Image (cartoon, rainbow, N blue to C red):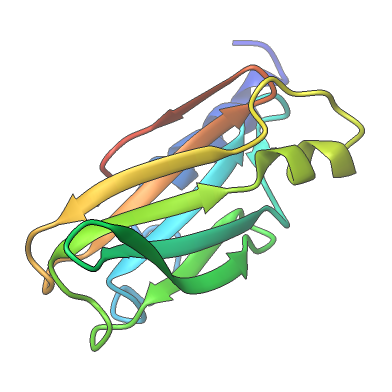
Amino acid sequence: MSSRAGPRLHTLQRHLGSLEYRGMNPVSSLLTTHVLDTASGLPAQGLCLQLSRLEDHGQQWTKLRKSYTDHDGCCPVLLSPGQMKADTYKLFFNTKGYWKKRRQESFYPYVEVVFTITNETHKFNVPLLLSPWSYTTCHGS
């Protein structure tokens, strides 16, 4: 492994790990996200995102929260336990704004991740691995 790959691998492992591993309070929110800039191997700090819920019998998105990722690429409080309900949600990531601040062209102006929560007592994490030319997400825990 090259000398540059070691720190990048550690950062990736930290971001894909559990909330407890990252030193966060797991009860602060039942829904969290974090973003890793895979082009640099560093957390995507300052990325604007918006959480919405599908309302009105699946006809309209209602904005619930606008936020920014912190220095660790995390947005640890998206929904508090009282706000969580079984429903369909959307996370909108403003990737164009993020890359523009870094003077980097990108292919995707935004990323939308739509997901369904069926149990409002479970914890959910929606990680995003991001580069100017690709993105990947998964159901985190």
